[in-house]
Length: 284
Length: 345
Image (cartoon, rainbow over the protein chains, first blue to last red):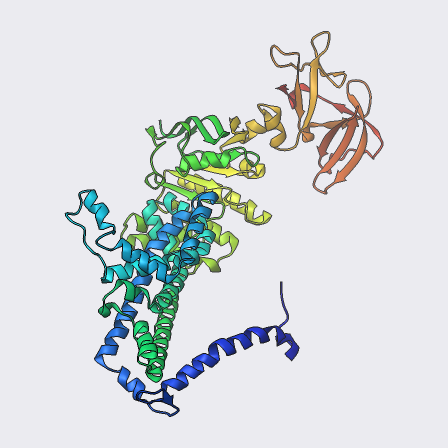
């Protein structure tokens, strides 16, 4: 169906509601945060309006730089793990009978209904020495004695991948369902084994979807602040943890705001880079 | 034996038998068209030859070797799909080179072969175009070139021309047949278009209900159909009941056709007579008599609909031999044994 472009001001009316919502609940709070990030902190008190760069200057230290680097690295690893696991899984899921698909999708959706706190505590139990999965390995004779797997980087990673996996599948699912199944069949008749067909046809044909999914999971993982605390050591804490710490426990709103703004800028920069790289790859 | 052989091939989907005990021998270099209405099992049969579906029973042999359980990618085939299935992320040249790349051919050899194939399909210089920028007929050619790039043992096509418009389809039929004759490659095409089958095939295999009804040369199928289904499916025909009269002579609608023999051991059958073999005469003795109900003048041919005792018979003639008839007129139809085919009931 072809539509006329909007002519009068009245034609834009349907846009007013979402625009207002976006302004009230996104633009205003975000603007406030940017403003606060330039405010002067009052020792032992709150803050006073000002325009100083102290908060940003304090951020540019090895310690905070390290935490920022770790947060980005963790989010990137989570995104890669999720896509690497979810792509073959979703591909096989789309080739299954409708009934099987429904069961799997319902199971994945039920993981989404779990709160981060429950996921965190469930995994910390599973990784514990007294009640964890190592006890099963001991019972099977694979391990000599039960040991605690948490706190550790692996535990943080597992918890976050577990949490982001259902999102990844749900984002990939529509694109994989739409993928013409005769493409893989054609590849097989032309001499590609099923595995080769997957890597030479399915993955490249879905390159844009995969990039978009990586970005989505990356941003999702960047905001995580509960799981690193529940399953990791202090060196595994993300920038989000430090922001919470500054804002709530140290009452340093301006510094917390500055860190948040910085995180948003770095994230946007990385996303832009990915998109540009994707465009370049397409043009080549 | 060189060529393809299907032996008692059966395919069941649950309780449904899609292909039922199919036996077929395709000598090397033959062009075979599998023809039938939708759901007759022709595509399933092709997919089993390709290895995309596994037969429930029976064996498939290629050049004497049993390939029933050989995975698709080890069969060295070329296949063109109904959807063409060109890879959207690759250019024309990369699509055609795909089978070579998968087999690890050297870059220069790939390029040489791609150029060779592109000139064969009259698309030289298109190697770097994205496939999305091609017209329907060009995509068709690229799909064919891709399937032929390794010089496969078997060339399989599933309704390859159904997406093209009528004119282009006719041209591609001729082109495909000429290409196959030049390369001498064993080719199997699945189609529901009998014109396509008549144009291209050495052997037409008519299927229905998962079984082969007849496998023979196009002209044989047209002139000597095995049963009334084949007669009706290939071209237009008039089917009439025929039975023996008291003296054992063949009688059609109360009229005795002199010299026509009934099937051995039976006293009734079905008579098939092609519209172009129905000659209209003046009504009288020695002919069936009926009334003209409609005349369809198509310019190139004229179809006359004649009603004889409630049965409609169609006669086709050229403008030169135009019968001088009009609607409502009484006409006679002479049947001679040489134009009639009697089929088992």
